Amino acid sequence: MTEHRLGINPGFLTKHRLNLAGLDQADSKAMIAEIDAQPWVDRVCLNKQTLIIAYEASRHNIDELIAIIEKYGASIKDSWWSRTKLGWQRQTDENIKNNARHEPHCCNKIPSGNRFRH
Image (cartoon, rainbow, N blue to C red; front, top):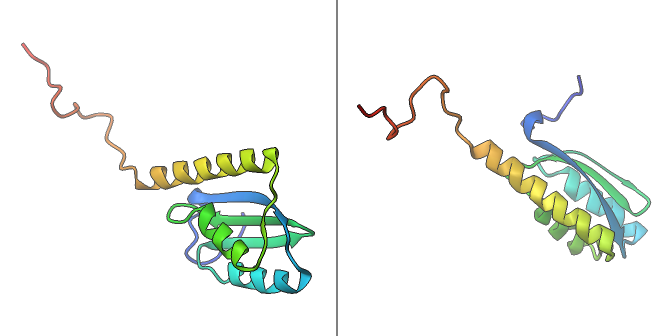
């Protein structure tokens, strides 16, 4: 079993890889430190120009992460594949957020309003 940071629910954990453009080596350490300091981030690392991150998406999304990246002068690589992946990642975050808010119902009850009519 993998250890997670305190407060991270592994059921709502998502992992993404973001290809970055325009990131200076000097700014990369400060950017990683700021991202790592976020309480919703479980793990983060930078491999050349690829940011690998795992975070809890039940209350946060990838756009919050992109705002931090852009604060340091970098951006998501502008290519068809990166834009497509970013769309999938946003959809994944939205699905996780919706699943976190969902209240399950009991399967043994008759649904309200649909009672048997005689």
